[in-house]
Image 1 (tube, helix red, strand yellow):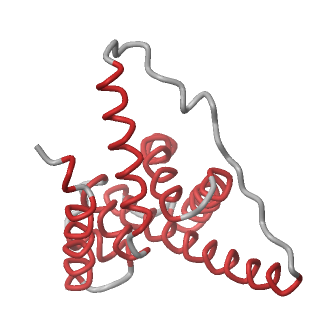
Image 2 (cartoon, rainbow, N blue to C red; image 1 turned 60 degrees about the horizontal axis):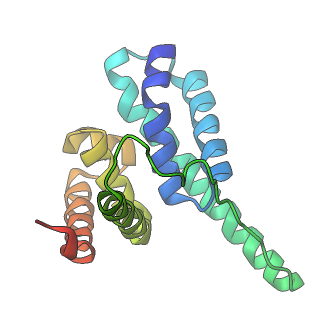
Length: 173
C-alpha cells in the first residue's frame, strides 16, 4: 500500500493542482484523499486500488471546489478579497542541464500554455483527460474512478482533447 501511494503521489498532486488554485490546496486534497483511501479501501485487492484512489481524489477535489465557492461568496459579502501569491522561485529556475536558452524558452512557454489549457477545461474534462492520458486508465477504469458511465468518459475525454488541440495548435510540429 505504501508503494502504491508513493507511486501515485506526484501524479495525484499534479492532477489536484490543475483542478485547484494553489499548491497548498492541492497538497491538502491529496493528503485527505490518501487518508480516506487507506481508511476505506486498504483491504481491497491491489488491482482495484488505482480507480478507487482516483475516485476518492476526485471527490476530495470536488469538495475543495465547493468549500472555495462558499468561502468566496462569504468573503465577497463581507467585501474582502482573497490574496493568493504562490510563486515558487526554485521551481521557476532554469534547468542548467539544457544549454539552449531558446529551447528552454519554448519548453517553458509550452508548459505554461499546457497548464493553462488544462486548467481552462471543465473539472470533468480535466479528470477524464488526466486519468486517461497521464495515468493510462482505460475507459472502464476511468468511469469507475469518476463515478460516471463509460459514454460520459468518452465524451469528456473527446471534448478535452479537442479543446487542448485548439488551444495548443501553434505548438504542433
